[in-house]
Structure formats: structure tokens, C-alpha cells
Length: 178
Length: 178
Image 1 (tube, rainbow over the protein chains, first blue to last red):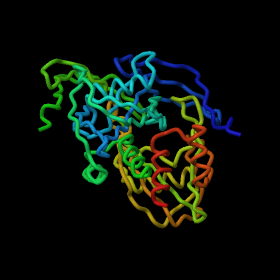
Image 2: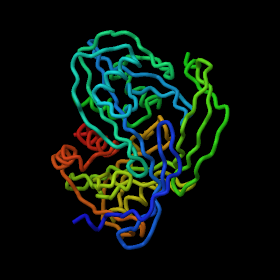
Image 3: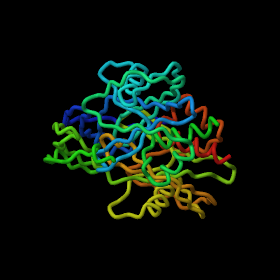
């Protein structure tokens, strides 16, 4: 029944190939036969980790986000290297950003962040059984770890220091889990 | 304490100005004094609506997403016109996509979808007291409305027809609300 929703590509024009994202413009035929343009960002995908400590705190990292020109507190996350397994990426990013290793890993959800213009898919894992690992900070990554209670996380949402979709999702997940 | 996280811009190179997004590359100085590049997508921002019917169903729209080359079921959403008030945009998008008007509007959260490379901010509203309005379909918008129970929404998450951050967030919100 959804064939009437499909758009077909007439022509793809590459605009930019970057370190992280590629951009192209697609000329498309709409379901009504008219033509339009779509701006499409390709992204390698990412992982995010809901890491709960033995004290039942959520690990966040404070990080400067250049597109916003401000610091956000987010769950640990990072983009997939070419061909990298998402679970291996999640383990790597958690240790690089927080110095923590986890015994138990559970895949929760994956989701597209901005399906209107980008194909970025984020794979979210729950990490439990945490222990301090070696701190292997990525040299291009500058983050500050903070461990927060549920009440503190909700206050950070209120103050908009937590202000991204995956971290608000993570706090909701934590509440639902009880 | 977070000054050590900041990155300063040395130079901004515009790459692309589109209908929906703009792209620029920024040369930046990292906190350790080294230089790096940031790829930044500018987006006008968007709204999304959690619309609950008198029968306690959630209104979703099935929509072809060109970056993914597939149909997703999402909560009604759309991008802000220049200078548009987010609440007015939410009312407009809900009616354009579903034919529904709502008496009661509550702002829930806003969140950045992909703070690593884009400044897109989504404002999420709860819409209640629904009534059928006039169907004013946007001519460039092809969507199919489906109203789902919580159990149906969870099955759609499992089958990955619901597969974007804002809609998974919406289903969590609905569960938490009880």
C-alpha cells in the first residue's frame, strides 16, 4: 500500500566529501510525478552507551559541541570507524571517554537521528558491571566525565545542559527500567 | 571549569546553501592548541507532535525518507519556516499531515538530534483534545496516517518501522505517562 509514498532518484550530484559526513543533492520524482530536490547527508553511523554504575548513577560526558557553540552533557557516544562492529565501537568509546570497562552489554535500540536529511543511525547499548579500565583518551577528544543520579539527570534536562535526543531517551529508559 | 573544553574558530568556509540545510567547514583550535576541522550542518529547526486521540491511540504518519530509501512510521513533524513560532508550526504540521486539530497543547522537551555535526533542534509538543480539522495536505508531502495502541507502537519499534529517535522517545514518554 505504500508504493504511493516512494520517491525515485533521477540524478545524484555529489557536493562534499568530508572526514565525517558526505553531502549530495538528489533530483527525485515525487509520488505525484512532479520533480523535487533532496539534500542528503551520509554519515557512518554511531554508538551510544547507557552506563550505570554500581552506585546506580548514569555516566555522562560534558563535551563542547561546535555546531551549537556550547557544552552539552551526553551519554558516551562516538561514530563508527569503517567496518567497525557497533558493540566493539561502544566498548572503545566508553573506555576512551570515561576510562570505564563493562562486563555486561545489552543492545537496546537503534534509531535514525534526523531521517529527513541524514542517514545517521545510532546503536544504543546498556553497559553494566562497570570497572575502571585504563584511561585511553583519544587525542582529538576533550571530555569531562560526570556521574549523576536520576534526580540530577532530570535537573540537567530542565537546565538544558542535557539537550540532545539520545541522552533524553537514555534518562527516560532509566526511569522506565525503575 | 569547562573553558578547557572550548574550541575556537579560526576560519569558516561555506560549502553549500540548500533549500533545507547549509554546510560549512570550520578550522578550529582545539583545547590543546592543535588545529582540526569541523563539518557543521545548519538546519532551521523542527517540531514534532505527540498527538493522543480520545481512544488513547498515538497518531503516526508513514513517510518515505529519501536518505534511508525506506518508509518510516513517525510522529507528525516538520521543519520551521523562517521566523515561525514553534507552537504555530506544530499546529500547522499536525493539520497538514493528519487533518487533525487539537485543543490542548503542552511543550514537553526540545532536543538536538545530532549535536556532533548539526544544529537541528526539535521542539516536541503534546497535543490533546483532538478533533478532525480540514485536511490541508502540503503538495510536497506524501504521508499515510495510522493511529496505534501502545502495544502496536511497541511492535512497530520491534519491526523497525518505527526507527527514529523522536518517535522512540515519544513512545517512551507515553509509557511513562501511563
